[in-house]
Image 1 (cartoon, rainbow, N blue to C red):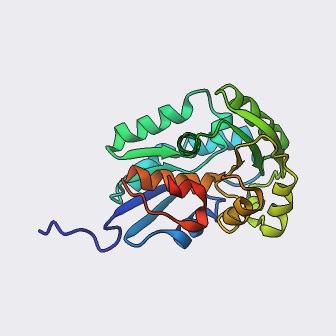
Image 2 (cartoon, helix red, strand yellow; image 1 turned 120 degrees about the vertical axis):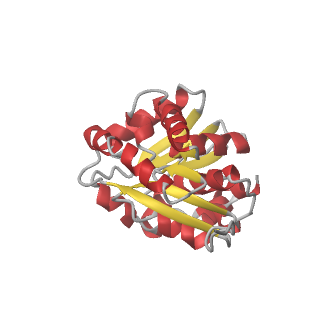
Length: 243
């Protein structure tokens, strides 16, 4: 028997728990990942309109998905769903990642813990917020952040109900949406949802506004790499990857 490193992922293997409607996060990660990192995903069944009931049904599948992705031999597990943060009970993210770690012996992060750590790394407390969520779910986001002593200077939503529609948001739709955010007195622009394509516009928005941009997928990749002890800089992913 050999103790040689695996052919793929010599520097680290990232495991993703991904809602099944999300056709964005894996291509975005692969498009920028440094050499000798590997990515593996297990999908959670999600279909239909985005509602709290749908999120709870998805959450019921997590235990099996965690067991499956851990069996791949990953070094970090990322729970890649942002909207659960606003629907599940207070402290859910911290409890969920702790349970994954305890059950598998593998470090675990979530979309919220990654976003939180990214904002802390950049010293962000005031920001403009954009999401694609249905209006009723988006409305919960501002209070969530304010309860944690952040200031949401302005916020807006694309108000997309069908989960399958979010991955279709392209630059032509996203850029005008971001440009309408009032960024006066903001320290950053935050764009949420792991199924919202953003990697192609982060640099462009930062150049146009002079502000750092933090997105769900960017923060997840940054957090996964930092958890692995890797500090590679990825220029296309903006200021976050300089810290």
